[in-house]
Image (cartoon, rainbow, N blue to C red; front, side, top):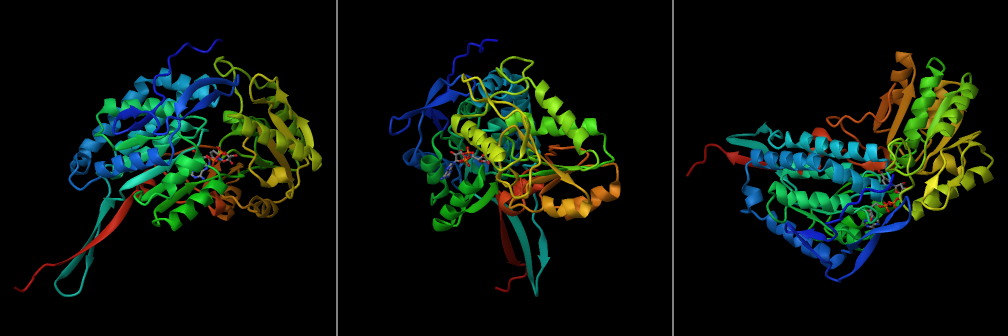
Length: 489
Ligand code: NAD
């Protein structure tokens, strides 16, 4: 199927509700990973553009600004309106996502709806955060007020650009903050289209600003900016550490980080082997393996290991990889050349270290960044592919004997984002859920995101939680006001 012929309208920086070129005049190419062709040249924001965006966001947050004086129900209405417009533009946003991420068109369109749903979730929170009152000695009473943290910088990745945008904007807007967002350099087009909807929805100028550009320039300018009060980041551990350093060295801005994972999924002997294999295959290959919670370490009980592997291999062989615009395609390319080479590098490392390549392991053609669904067995806990995040369609299968042993091994990682267990035994499931060091644990399901429930990582998988009340707290300061209720004068 040929790519739908669409005009890419929004390629500039969005500040104060207007699209403007980069101050440097520079642009950078956005590449279609399915055919390596340039989709669009986009304005390349850097420090000067971040300065302008932060100034706009600061002005929009000024004490008597329209945004600050707006009733919570007014903010709520704007968030709902934006969600409606995103849904209205599902077709074009889905196409942009498919073009720049390489995600199959069906999933791309679903992500648009998920983004709208995620925003609506926070439309409901605008008037649902509360302070407390405290007993104080004498005539005093203390109370707390929750107030927006101010100008927030948000730096997002390329693997779910619209969902990540919505997860970041929703709580910030519900809290009453103003925003400077930097999308990933591989995937700015969806975010820029949504920026055009910000104006249409009626947000005051400067409340939401979007600056496309590179991480080491535009991204670094956000994390070191003296007028940014909080930075929220999703991406790699290495960059997360740089952002924390920059935040500490500048103005001690608040930092929340959603980073990578090496998530274990335990398949017990009492669980249906076929269902388990289908689940493990689908969740490791979804979005070409480029999902932070992907179950990249599957521990299978030794008694069902061989039967499980046979089914997993059959699944991998049957998977349809190709042009993401073809409706029956299940897997598109890796997002860019760097990620493609990185994943192939891990596959080579696995072979070299003696893991058994059961299926896959090769690039597909040379027109785009496609990689075969890949399964390794005989993986030992000390191998590179067992320890590091591959971020590709590569499943590592491990054998285990006892729950005690597998809990120990599953926890033997620097990450702690997610984990799962497939079992009919409630005691095993609860024991595992209690013992595992991970921010999300899924029992007899996987990647089941609940927007009301907190999401985030233990250990080096991050700091802070997103979604629901927990996500909102990241964007609020707590002020204590103590009052003398019977002043003598
Ligand atoms: P990355 O961390 O380099 O990029 C994510 C975002 O950070 C992008 O917007 C990028 O421009 C920005 N950035 C890069 N350097 C920066 C800096 N010095 N200061 C501020 N911002 C900066 O991720 P990547 O290179 O695109 O992917 C590499 C790895 O990151 C993946 O293999 C995976 O492990 C991880 N990753 C995780 C997630 C997740 O959902 N947790 C998403 C994408 C990537």
